[in-house]
Length: 504
Ligand code: HEM
Image (cartoon, rainbow, N blue to C red; front, side):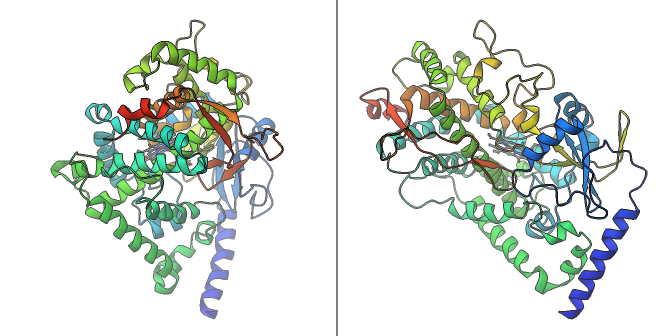
């Protein structure tokens, strides 16, 4: 132990001194002043850092920098700059920060979302695009309608179960069915995705800033890599996760259809990936899909509870287009207000308010700045979505901002990724964007068609106001705090009307 401690102390001292003395020929955009050696370490909050970043943007402008123990960070809080640096210079800015604990030890370089921009990343992205975004696949996503109908049925028949559980079930079930061809997850009963969700908690925890000593002092990597004892807990997590991912990956789809995992198992579709690579790819897709989807649905329901005028307007659109039968995905093009609601909820409360950080793969020159290789680039999606010029009155929930005066979906301005900035930028933009948007539009349509949303009442009969600034930071994503509402059916025979849409 004494040996390790001495080595540890020496490594830290050398690293901090080295980083300080070798800042190189850089010209970073100015930002908050930090302390010698540790930089801004003590100023960046461990929880909800994007709120601080928004404040700093007001003082230092739409692009500014800070450093943590010599590691430069650049925060981008303006759409034009994000489009220049993260989209147009994506070849140089599409890397990921070196997340040693998560990427090197816990995941051994197999997490599509966190891995460096290397050959395996290219192969995984291509394989995902081919299986997830193909026209045939999108067309066959009856799963999304069935799960929206099940969510409505659950809220109707089991109001005693927490809203959070209803939504978690729906998000897990959609992901398990889409990715593994698994059967729908019951509301009351065993949850076959539980283990995946447990693994996700462990892997996400490694991303919380400050949680991993090796990411604060990267030279420790060599010491940890050489010591079986120090590496042991991470090895165990990797091995147990791999075993579970492979078990799911090799399971046969419940209805004999091809789903992502079966597509990847077949012939050329594997793109030469090993079994471990393919199994991790699908496991990681589950993790990227499940919590973002659950968060977005929870915010949708909170918005419906807080904004009855929005609900009325959406219901008027549904009543004209859909009437008293459940909506279907074929109705979506005739439901512009529902589309605007989904755009607005993802702007108002993006599930990942800072996206996933990018990193520069080489030195880049942008305007007057020279941003060195290895700089961490944060797209401050939360603040960009509140830019007073681009999105006036940004804290308000107002779907109309995405509509023309005639009520059609407005042509998205350039560089806004179809007005869906919540899915990030450049070559790392979310691979699940189309599937996710379609799913949220269907969910929103079902919920609004089926229910009026009222505030819940406390024991004194007083309305409980859901708190839309109760934000729970779990690493990359941010959940709304738990809240209560009362879903009042719009049809006396809602349960019967849902029957044709439920899984057979
Ligand atoms: C509301 C739902 C979702 C939101 C808001 C969301 C948001 C994001 C964001 C912000 C990124 C980082 C982009 C960047 O680095 O600039 C991302 C990456 C990613 N997303 Fe999503 N996502 C959602 C749903 C999904 C779904 C359904 C899937 C898969 C089926 C998925 C798979 C991924 C993957 C694999 C990446 C990593 C891509 C890479 O690093 O190359 N996401 N997502």
